[in-house]
Length: 205
Image 1 (tube, helix red, strand yellow):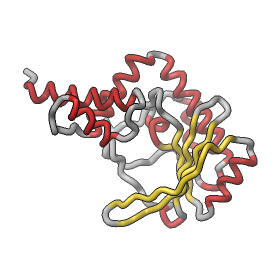
Image 2 (cartoon, rainbow, N blue to C red; image 1 turned 180 degrees about the horizontal axis):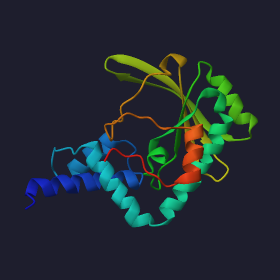
Image 3 (tube, one colour; image 1 turned 30 degrees about the vertical axis):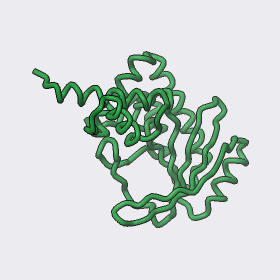
């Protein structure tokens, strides 16, 4: 039998997921805080609980079109990664995971010490750069910066390219949502996936 606390926990996770799905919040933490406040509670569900609800909502509202878009986004990612092949591109995020929803974009990481080179590669291929930005985060007391390029692709999907320094090339990151290591897909791995199982999901569940 489900307890009242368990039911409330699910409701908060579901509301946080709905806020993310509708684009009212962009970050899990803010979505959880707002959802908990709406229910007059201070309990915050785990990111994984919210991710599961978000996946459910996307399936409920998008149906079969969701898988069709996933394939299309992975193909778009493949074309973009071919442009970036000199910088060891890796597909990460929800397009890698196979958990896209309507607010999802394509996330690609590259390693290079001169962001201008990556910008030039994009513009030379007539892709529209919407904006660029420097971002910094602190993890385990260490501050890391990265350069981000936001691109509009030919089919109007959006992509975000994160440029890490070459010294971070071998650094593996832990996913703050699923708790596993972010491995992603390299160019040849994505090509194989598109040929063999284009809707495959990558989840530690």
